[in-house]
Amino acid sequence: MKIMWKPESAKADDIIATVVNTAALSVVGVANGRTVPVVILQPDDENKIDAVITAHSGISEGNCESQWGCSYDRNTILLHLEFTEPVALKIIIPLDIIHNGATIDQIIHTQCLYLMTGNPGMKLSQNLRKERILLEVPSREFADEWRKLYKKKYCKHLRKTHHISSKAAEEVFDKLQDEFSCIKKLRMK
Image 1 (cartoon, helix red, strand yellow):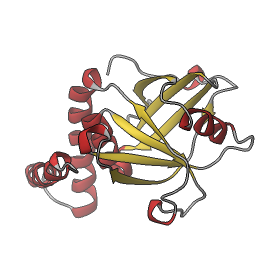
Image 2: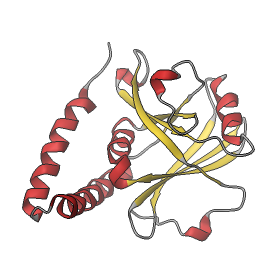
Image 3: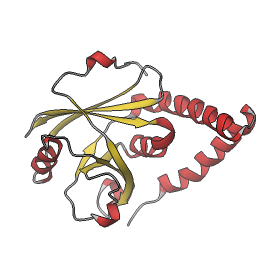
Image 4: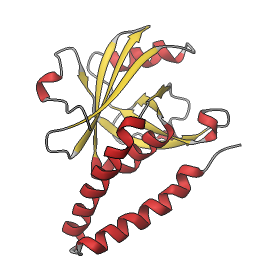
């Protein structure tokens, strides 16, 4: 990872979002039918995230730049989104590597995500008609660094929680990745 975000790089008007849930959605004609991750954020106090989603959902083009980063302890991946048109807003989405690793992996694979808001406990299946936007998240430069970091952190987690050897943890991780690759390859036609 070439750029490490420093805590002071977040400005007062940036929104550090809270992820309340993640999901995945496959739609014919969107992202070539691939399974696209859905990140559900808790609405902020001033409803700025909802305003951005509303403004962007009614148009086919909007400007949003994205950048990957991580916390100093390298346990959290930070997805920085900067919307410029039609509504300007900067959102930082923290994603825990262990709990959201599959979601991060799928965002990197599809190079896109759906973004929507909801209250804690909200499930996509209960709110399929809720407004959401599809964002392009170019990730080619980040992909190799992500794979190394994900494997290192997940294997460490497996060793601690299941009291297994490093070799066994790597075998489990590799097997999980093989099984998850089947999901990555699925397409709606």
